[in-house]
Length: 367
Image 1 (cartoon, rainbow, N blue to C red):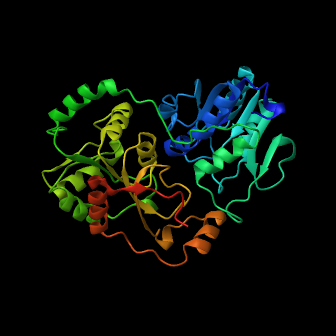
Image 2: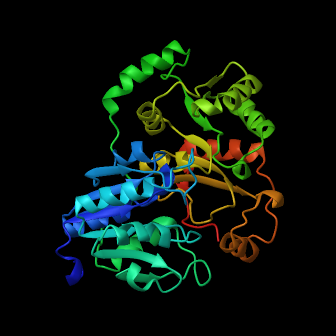
Image 3: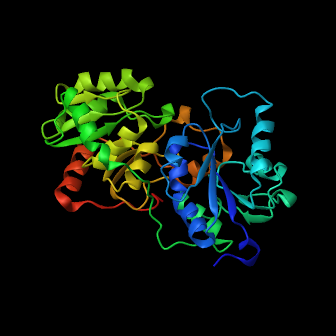
């Protein structure tokens, strides 16, 4: 049951202004708020996550805005902040919940809710935020403990009494479009009635890349048994084409060929996805698709949540490591011993184990 001072909150703003995967990991916490309060839930998120926000059953409305303290595609005009604050103010929310990664400073985002006059404001903060947060949860991560991001978000809302018995990621996927999508794939010479899996090599940050030559080596071995559908956005077509050409005729470059809804449906229907640690692995978790993750050790709290698969970890090159001091602390404490690069044969072995029915649930954390 919600804490007494939150029981009259019937219009709640959840702020998660990051990427698609970040928002997906907040879904169970958003569900807890919805189930415990019966409130109308609005999500403020980025243009990169807006499409997925509308597929979350517990979300009633979406505000799309790219905040200047979150990595965005283009610079923002300074007065745009005043506009989004005004929009938030006009909606007259009863409460705001700010979801963050432990390495982020929450206060710029909290300030939006404060300036918009939202009476109850919940969030983690390492320092005392005084008036900015009415419901301050001191942030102990990562110095005293590290939680999976989903657990972190669930624990945040549990502090005001918002609970759920269903902690899985979930999005609504329109499966009625599969016939149309299958026909589209047929025009690209892909036979979905024959064995196939997804390869997703693209990353938003170079430090998460798995080397192309190793992708090709793994792909050549896997192509003996499966059609390999290589997915990505339009900007990743050069990469997916190189991978397809390196593997050969059993590989298909789909970068830029699919709309977001088609891509999500493809992930849901896939027997298995192989991906670097990007939003695709959280889509796989949200559709309960088995996944093999080539996981650069950037954020240990972002493993796929409660899904079958295998996570194969490797180091971030030292010259590419974050300048964020909190992330550096985690690297020094937990990842001081170098992790070798994942071998292509490890990928092949993981795929065969999972597709033979012997896959296991992925652990919450690698530490």
